[in-house]
Amino acid sequence: MKRNFVAPNVYIRGTGSYLPETVVPNAHFEKIGSSDEWIFSKLGIKERRIVANGQTTSDLAAEAGRRAIENAGLTTDDIDLILVATATPDRPAPSCACFVQEKLQARKTVAFDVAAVCSGALFTISVGVQYIRSGMYQNVLVIGADTFSNITDWERRDAVFFGDGAGALVLSATDEDKGFVDFVLHSDGKGKEGFSIPAGGSEMPASAETVANKLHTFRMDGKAVYDTAIQVVPECIEEILSKNSLTVDQVDYLIPHQPSIRILQDIARRVGMPFEKVKTNMDKYANTSGGTIPILLDEVHRAGTFSGGDLLLFAAVGAGWTWGTALYKW
Ligand SMILES: CC(C)(COP(=O)(O)OP(=O)(O)OC[C@H]1O[C@@H](n2cnc3c(N)ncnc32)[C@H](O)[C@@H]1OP(=O)(O)O)[C@@H](O)C(=O)NCCC(=O)NCCS
Image (tube, rainbow, N blue to C red):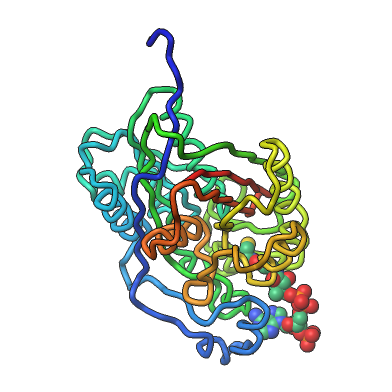
């Protein structure tokens, strides 16, 4: 063990993302009784990306990871740990992270998944940060990747909500005055029926009946998701700000999970944040679950939006329930 160990700061050294090429516009859902007008006005979505036949979650994740490592100016040999946030791994076992490790030929790394569905990326970033702060690892690749097209019943109207995609970030240690300031995370298993995939686990193993009844596709209580999100996320934002003696005016950008544009507008209104500070790309990609925050971060980062000293606020909410916030000094 190191003596007189001072925990380093942990910063985002590089970002990357990968979206599959196939675009599914809202018009696709007219045949199941939805419409572009409803989807765009309620959710803020115009189109989403869907994987090609045979393309897997780890394919998207590995490409996003490769791009983040390159953006960080590192090689796969520099990465100590690969963490993947996903609810749609290539197989229930082994982890999606092991598939990614093989695709990246990152032979020296440790690799495992973290499960927190739509809060997955934020929760996984918090795990990576602890490994670096403890001194155990120097560079951690965090990837959020999902292919919800595989767990969607395309004949139901709630097929409109999600898209496929992956985003990644490389976390590294630094002595400079920048990086993650704090995290506030919460879980409440009482919300487990709000969003779930009923079959395929130990509670209801796969059978001819579960397949016939489409129980391997997601079930979502849209109203419960809405009501929970607009309550717990503002509370969690206020919690992290007050814990750090900050006000909402001091935050430069909110980088949130992308559940729906109306949820984001309600959250911003409840915490008193002008919507111009809220970043969103759900018009193009819909809700990519574990992918949302890293994809959005990559887009905003590569656009050159952030300046040194900017205060970023991350916020996520998802199945479980799970929710959390993080503060980051650029
Ligand atoms: C789903 C959601 C948009 C419903 O909003 P709402 O205003 O409560 O809407 P309602 O359920 O009252 O439905 C309003 C109308 O839209 C219709 N509707 C519902 N889903 C629809 C769809 N996909 N396409 C078209 N119309 C739809 C309903 O039939 C209803 O029609 P009616 O007024 O003629 O009866 C809202 O609850 C929501 O955004 N939830 C969050 C879901 C989410 O973000 N999930 C992702 C994270 S897990």
